[in-house]
Length: 255
View 1 (cartoon, helix red, strand yellow):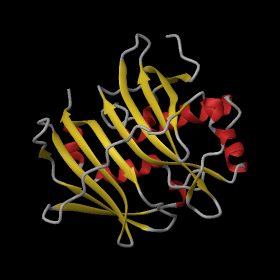
View 2 (view 1 turned 90 degrees about the vertical axis):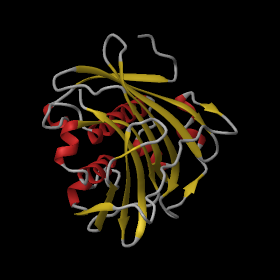
View 3 (view 1 turned 135 degrees about the horizontal axis):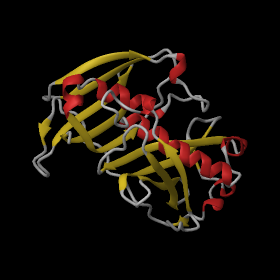
């Protein structure tokens, strides 16, 4: 497929460690894949992590919206793609996709990013040097990703606890994004996960989780969404009584 100037793709073969016991790519590994292609695009444009850090900060994800048609299986060859779609002073909007050689799209993901200063640990104006090479469109009003609906006080939820381990931290000195998905979805249990496939997910990151902290992962029981009829679950990650991450998930029966 012919790519636009702001698009980038790499070829990737699905490995066994990216899949669940049924041989299907896990949601967490799906996120690792799109991070991989975004990093390779940045390196190709010579604005990789070292260059970004030299500008006094780093990119931080605030929201993802994940839409899944189906998921690739072990040993399949796929194309991982991305484009930096638009940005304003503080936010950058990026799209990702996973497709096969014929163009069938397994998943389409949108993400909202900010530039965070190391010194203040607060978001700052995006430096031109790290956004201009993407050929992204500067806009006054950037597209928004819908925030998840919170777990209501009267909704019952199940909780699991996880300690943040040394190997949960990646080279950017943050908890790898994929671990949030593992923490959230693991609470639903094997019986549910073996028989259901994630169809859509909205996730919002509000606060960093750090090494050594105890993560409380809450999930509501699957309940039919009155708007689309699919099963829906709500998720929260709480650390030291602080809400760090929220997500809503929609599910269908596994084929």
